[in-house]
Image (cartoon, rainbow, N blue to C red; front, side):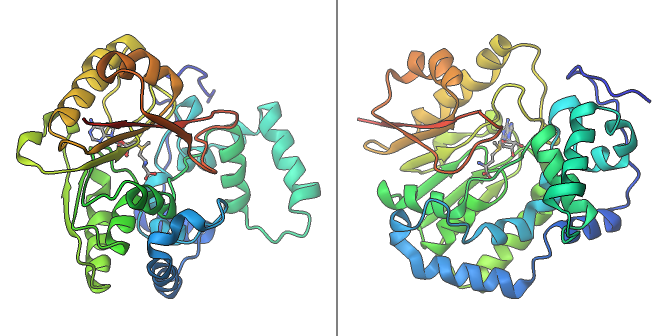
Length: 315
Ligand SMILES: C[S@@+](CC[C@H](N)C(=O)[O-])C[C@H]1O[C@@H](n2cnc3c(N)ncnc32)[C@H](O)[C@@H]1O
């Protein structure tokens, strides 16, 4: 089999059972419930002080990963390939010089001691050579919610759960998450049950459908912070493919940003984690130049690929 370099149809398959996938995910990240509890409690102690934590702090990431790491492994990057397809077809991938070199480097230098198991080595190779599917850290969400005094959050491309965790930890009165990827329904159910067991006061509402089809007039929110997919960089499960950037602008970003902005409360904040291209192609036309802009600390979706956070205050 040859590996397609186009980003059209998936050409790769894999034959792992759900149990095997779970085992593999656990071999990469062996996270226990005790670890989750410990990190959740640490986040609670940090509370409104997230801004003063080290930008490298990973506290809380294990909570996200415990619930949704498996689903993240199904996201497709370059070659239209997810992690499981990558490892199932590793013999084919090893014919590519840069992947062969990377694996050789791990064998002879980086993992000479053999401490990292093969699934970790393959994951790190996948991250470097195919695509790193990063999360926004819960602590980063906490910093933003605190900075802008959020009391009701709308996150219309919710993703991996860090936002919900941050809202729950801070007892933000209301968090509404919208997510198209139906594979995340069960993980979110478990995550919500977990935050409930930790006595959060946050009223959490997760809506699993396209954010384009939600009636925002019946929702109340004074802060929007989300991170929509960026054109064709990564392919999330059950997402809709668009033919061109222009088509995606017209059919996705413009209607979605307009509707969600329209029902944001007066004096509320509209905050997007997007790249410069979407900001320039879509957002300036809709909302004008943003009121504030900052880098998302320690989060890059691809090597050398910087993303910003753009903030508008609805006056
Ligand atoms: C960049 S990810 C968000 C990751 C999130 N910021 C995090 O760190 O956990 C984008 C998410 O938007 C979701 N998505 C894509 N199209 C959508 C739509 N029409 N409605 C709702 N969610 C959508 C994808 O399934 C994906 O989970």
